[in-house]
Image (cartoon, rainbow, N blue to C red; front, side, top):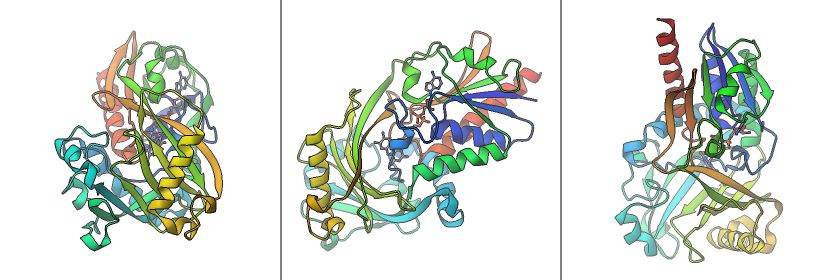
Length: 358
Ligand code: FAD
């Protein structure tokens, strides 16, 4: 029976373990330093909004395209997964239009005019001029989803356990150490590396293409009637304005920042003020017109998006005598691409297993 050890219990690790657990016969152990329920700067998954705002360009859209139907199904058919559908508005500012047209923008496809994802959502529409806030050149609206990650990750972990996956706390210094950590004993046939940003420091991997993209946010109790994001802010090039309301009482996330190369784990109070001001300016309904003082704060937070120059790494590699499948470097789209990426990682595991059986 194939013996598989997954290192990492963020959305990438748990989704990969779950898809592997649906295949009969796999013996799966997940080993991780951080588990759902933890908040830590080394653990990106609890900090995500997490909503679905396609970010890939059309060429790299396959992971997000393949994930959306599953997220939509969970939102409509599986209430215990903690996902709901909510309209989302994407605004392209007049000030950013030239920059957006030149390309090379941080969010790649999200702010494109005539985006590929207009066919992904049944109800996608371009906004008429009279529905645009001041200063916006154009914008679109579609029925997106928002995941309450505090409900979703434990739910997915539970689905894995129901299929026999065993979860263990542990930290490996070198990826090949994980091969000896299977709960079933013996040497694992395959190790899956879903260590996110920490793959930059993990022995045997030491991926220098990984860069943190710092995201500061404020979680509030106020409810948002819809979600929104815009292509830039007047405050700084690496500051953002987005609002997303999590399902099932998970609070509303006010974002944010997109600070490439910053490892700073502590929230900056001035930045927090700017985040809140921008949010209430864009959506006065959040506080019934009472401004920032009407916000009811649950917490301030910082997460580091695991950005990788050149894109996500989903590859197989033999390290010493251990087969490793990598699935890390999902930047700001780890949830909305989770099923597509995990499917590809499972495909690589299957290639390795049929090869080693020859
Ligand atoms: P992580 O969640 O970082 O998990 C890594 C795991 O590996 C952890 O369990 C860790 O303990 C373990 N680990 C690492 N090293 C070791 C080791 N040596 N030994 C043992 N275990 C180890 N995505 C969306 O889709 N939509 C959004 O709206 C969205 N918003 C975001 C907002 C912010 C502010 C941030 C920070 C991210 C956002 N993201 C969003 C991105 C998303 O959160 C990440 O892409 C995703 O969480 C990455 O998951 P991961 O499992 O790859 O890594």
